[in-house]
Image 1 (cartoon, rainbow, N blue to C red):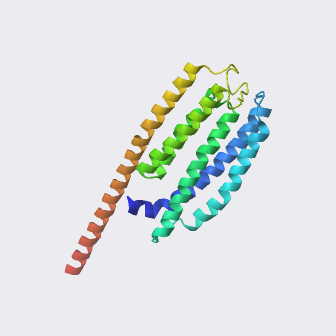
Image 2: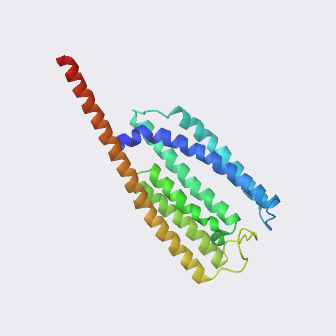
Image 3: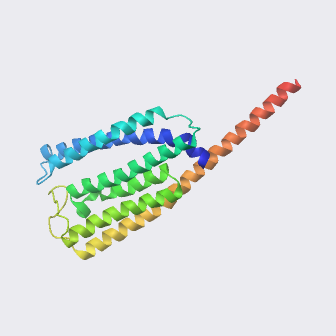
Length: 224
C-alpha cells in the first residue's frame, strides 16, 4: 500500500485539484442559474459567489504543486508532505461543502447527499484509517450544522425552490437525517476502501506477472 501511494499521491492530488475547479465553477454557475433562471427566492447569491471564488483562489497553489509532482516520488519526506496537503484539502472540501449546504437550506436541502460523495472520494484517495477520520470529520460538521439550526444557534437559510418549506426543523427529522447520514457514511468507507484495496492487489499481481514474463522472455532469449 505504501508503494501504491508513493506512486499515486501526486497524481491523485492533481485529479483532486482539477475536480475542485469544476466544483467551484459549479457552485458559482449553479447559484447564478438558480437565481436568474429558476427564480429561487431568498438565495444568498453573493455569499455563494464569494465561497466559489475563495475555493478557486485556495485551489490555485494546490494545483500548481500537484502539477509538479504527478510522477513517481522517491523521497519519503516529499510523499508525506503531499499526503498531508491532500488530506488538508479534503478537510477544506468538507468545510466548503458545509458552508455551501448552510446557504442552500442546511439539513432541509437535498444537496446533503454530497457528503456521501465526499466520503467516497476521501476513501478512494486515502488509506483506510485516514478515510475513517475524514468521514468522522464530515459527519461532525454536518451534525453541527443540523443541530445548530435546530437549536437556533445557527441562523437558517431557506431559499424557496431549493427547499420545500421554511418551517422550523422538527427534532425527529433532525434525528432521522443524522441517522441516515451516519449509516451512509459508515457504509461508504469500508465499501470504497475494500474496492480500492482490491484494485491495488490486482495491480500488484499484474506487475508481478509482467516481471515474471520478462524474466522468462530473457531466459528464452539467452538460451537461443
